Image (cartoon, rainbow, N blue to C red; front, side):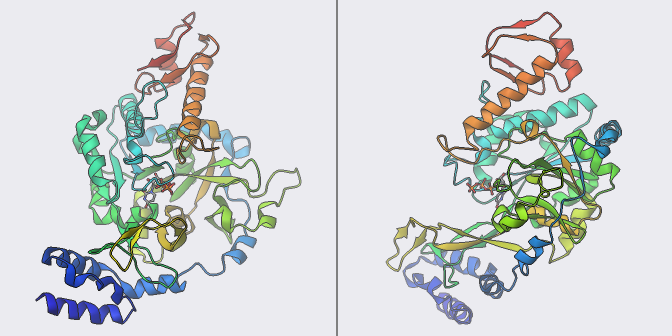
Length: 465
Ligand code: UTP
């Protein structure tokens, strides 16, 4: 049986020059052989070969980028933002009708942060020590309580984060989110290849695979039954955000409202870039379609183009916060071409011919990932809606001590935002006092004013919860 299995696999792998994946076959216990055989059977080697050869790349990105112009957008200041009362009203009505849910992606490996657990478990609350997961769930519960509805959370993990995430949430009773409102689903994986297109083993009986990118959400959302759940609940829209941004304003009404007013299938929240070479993806228009061009793919002369008033033409920075119509996701999931794979050179540990695990010091492999923002170009009426960075974006990407996007920079942003909330409600704050507000304490300005009447003085660090 095992020998037959080896012959069959070997013949198949040989057609794609991947026989090395069976190098340790005869040393493996039969259980390990079965596991490896199952993994190999699930890999589409034809497709991997095409990815390695680049025949599935987006054609001539540089020419595409040269045609980029500023995207259809609602700016913070300007004509279109005048109707923001209408936007808030439309969003409020949608939320109150229970027609929106949240989609949180948390399948990344968080390699740069170097935290030995899923990133969502990172204790980011500057005074509260709340984890990223808890901070996001607190927002959902606060909105639900304010509008008298329940907002479901679809939480995407990957094989790298799934079990510890479930355990953490269970240990904390889902931070108060009812069980029926939490759907944890696991995204798919992709093998990595070396320079010659050979897949790598990370154990004698296991091919190295990693999560297939946040764009893996689309397939996983459908295959897991979560899309169906969303439809059965009557959800029309989904608010999408990433676990590592504690400042993300869940179900931001301005974003959702403009998305509804524009009858858009996918709307993306953006912040204005400070400089042409800011290291963010650029939300741009190409031939009447919105798309994101990564900073590394944008030719410098295109990024530097300016309007007559000196402002950047390509001003819109991607912060990975989107709203999707649920029926758009359903349609996109049926199309094979909606999400291409992007390639990235990465360090991927592998076993050498002696069966020893090697941790490479430099990138040794190409990983293939899908990016969810690529859906934008197939969405009808897609627009960008600007927000102030200090209100919505403080990602936790790098370890303490790095120059930017660290736990400390995110904590400083949370404190600055919450201090401003207190100050705007007219409360006297001693200088240097640190303030953190749990949105469940006060979701809106009026509640905050009611709870902290005029004349209140705050002279010590306070976590309002
Ligand atoms: P990043 O691309 O910043 O990756 O993910 P990361 O895993 O957090 O960190 P590094 O690059 O390994 O240091 C942005 C967001 O997308 C999610 C992450 O969990 C994060 O919320 N993501 C990323 C997924 O859900 N799946 C993926 O395959 C990749």
